[in-house]
Image (cartoon, rainbow over all chains, first blue to last red; front, top):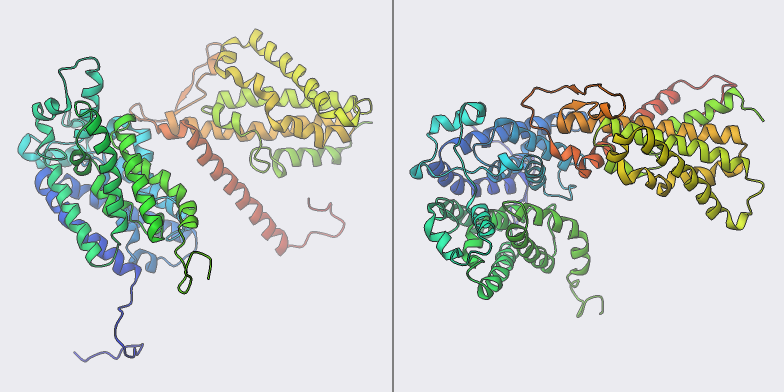
Length: 350
Length: 229
């Protein structure tokens, strides 16, 4: 093999590597792998099937819509952004939901939330969270069914695949998420003082040692991947830190006031989609805030809203709605948090 | 004082397509969002609005020389409100089941800006027959739009068509277009669904108009043909 002459000659100093969308998206996908591996190990292969379904749907929807829009297909598919969206959708949907659920959600995210707004870089809302909102609003029952880990009596691997493609052949395999279960149990026990958060967490096996039996380890996977993304400078520390601080602070306040009825901050940080949202969803560079101070405001507000929605709202988790609501505020946040231009002593004044 | 064929064609084209209340003027969104959860509701509310618009345009146009310019808006509203009350009572008497379903949206026709807009923009400046045609044709434009939105939302949202038809025609049954285990896409029935369907329809109309314009550009109109609008 001979060495190929590069088409473009670059000159010194060789300090900065060119940053491409493909490179960033590839790193995000890589960062998701540890969490996915733990997910598949503990809960079975269903999630891998969902990831494949979402990926295929996203690629087809992206290609089809680019063709309709008379845009080049290959470069847009190669930038992998649709695949990142697809994976985030698969990871936020119940792993054994019927096949049409993930196909519908992914197609809606790519076509309506991404391409109708102008494609990559133009969408005001996070496409993955639009898919989640569509499905949780339309099919709340299916979207609230989450599995047990394999070790705790979860469905056998083959039955999991059957559940995805022939949902009518498998019955009674799933329950609520830990967050959902805690909320429902507390609401049913209104007036019964003997039932406290501590006793509920102790009496039911689904809670495990952190955010839920099995889920705490998956969450650890998101944390590892997220920290690697910060180290790789794909994302900055602002959004994850502020989001976790936001949800932690409000959870701490409620917990200190009434520990019998509000779970501790750690439960809310490790439970639900908090860490996945903090590192992978709220950090979307297109729909999120862009200025450093803006990112802090944006993410802290997501954390607070997510807590309020998941504790006082009707839906199992609040991260998706919090992200969508704050996506709407991004232009306002960015306008008021412009950093001073180099040379300015104070904002706007020389 | 009668209306010529061309005049009517012009009014009809504007009402049904070019100045369509829902797709171009984007007026009357409140009933559009709340009522078009199925085809029957959308059609019946549009028919009620059509009736009000035709009658109020005719009445205002007949009285236009007697209404002092300075207080015309309150007078217009009074005339239209009286006619809305007539339609409201008629529906209560003869289509009571549907009246209960549509509820507050029948009396609320008076607050629909399209009614006052057509009175002010058209009826106050044109003779009665033209004004009544304008009201009716704007109503027809609203009718087909709301019918289409209602039908799409109903089929996508719950898999049926013509549900609630028994409130209008006794004994009639709705159609079931989807398999029996169709779960229904609840979002289509909720207000966001109305916005999404309306947005797609506006896009479709703009697309058709753009194609039309491109076709007209390629083939210059014959000399002496009626000017395009």
